[in-house]
Length: 362
Ligand code: SAH
Picture 1 (cartoon, helix red, strand yellow):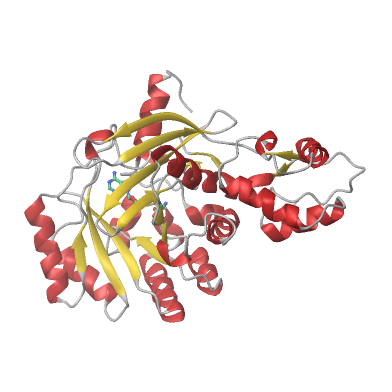
Picture 2: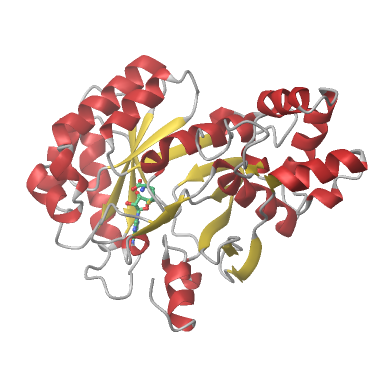
């Protein structure tokens, strides 16, 4: 079985169930051929999946016998909205979505001048262990399937009635720890018979899984890469992000340079500002020296406080000063607007508070 999607067992054997919403049109076509169905059925099924059909019975333009065959061999999971919180300040909507197995993930709908953006999760929990991040508390439960990543886009769109213009993979999880399903998701969401969202409108963020960066550079997909750097040197970065022991700053920045050079696309450097930790002028100069000559832009993010984690955000003027030092060294940067901080909008926080409310730990 590849990617948890495509069964290779013979029809006569007990088949593992096909995860219908993770299937690409060409794979559905192959399945239809195997079942002696006309190939246009593949397009119909793919389109139902992309429009958010929650059951095979909803696919009313398929023959009854095909629906029965699909029900025998396939599963079609659908997210449920467990919680919806809307920020009174800026209209940001945070969803807690329930998965078929009782787990939950978060997605956040944000409104910008350039359109509506959805921040989506790639895993249930995370095993990367960054000290300031809520997603990592409790570790990794499991990776999402490509279909489950897609479902966040479909169901946030249906629930809000809004057109989603862009996506960021900056929710719960490390996308490159679920590489194959994330790439499959890109193909699914980009397909003209489905959601049809341009790859140029997708950003994927990594805490520094270097091999994933090199692989992505080879995919020929014009997605934007963000690197969660957060520190300009190894001593500081290792203390904040355990992944740095495996892939130190030099290797990570080298991979980012390679991505920018190979794809011609600007790389975004995420830098969370933590008071007294990584926010001095010397840190800014060290960061600028690291990034010198790279096609990149630095996003300075005020730390969102997470319960049970130490650290507070740098003051506004400290962040502004950091940004000015970067600029004087020739590195462009912006201070990211805080959206939805009245609704636990930092990664993983809604899922954590719901787990606590339910009174069980993961
Ligand atoms: N695992 C990926 C994507 C998920 S995190 C990654 O690390 O890039 C998305 C972004 O939010 C990352 O830049 C992460 O470092 C940042 N982040 C996590 N916790 C935060 C917090 N409490 N305050 C501000 N930013 C945070």
